[in-house]
Image (tube, rainbow, N blue to C red):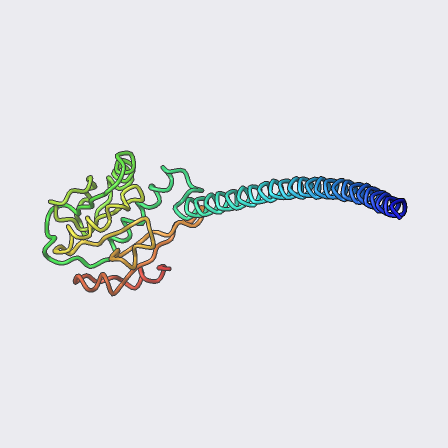
Length: 238
């Protein structure tokens, strides 16, 4: 009886022992598999991160290239606008030739406008707001000209003199509003190099087109200050 009991206890112990060994082995295998799975996952994460970083770098390069192209496009557009503006302002003509031709136009403007009695002085006075060399060029070109029997006098513009004509060159376009304000009480014809100013109070503006110099006249604006423009002058206005 006791032998059988001992035999059963021994058998149960062996079963528990072998079962325990198998469980530990399976547990070790599971742990190993888990570690391998974690390592594999970590490796995939590293790979994905590397790919993502690479994509970020490529996107940054692309954005940089796009920005560079946009900047270059803006620069080219700006240069193109400046070139157009330069051509419009007589960029195709040498400065001396440009103002020599414009001087002839100034003479025609003076000759074909009817001036009031208030200007019954001995000289026909033209004030020029511009560089010294431009003023000298106009003086030289018109030195022997007369308007209505009066000698044309060209001088650097000042706000004191009562002028027949004030010519604001491109170099002094920024002073247009100030000069216009200083002349508001006078019957003075304002001529500019910037045709945009024809809508801001200029009476006559030059339009430079390559080697041709044209002009536009704001007839209502001239008549508003009490002067009359001949049809001959209006005929060639743009």
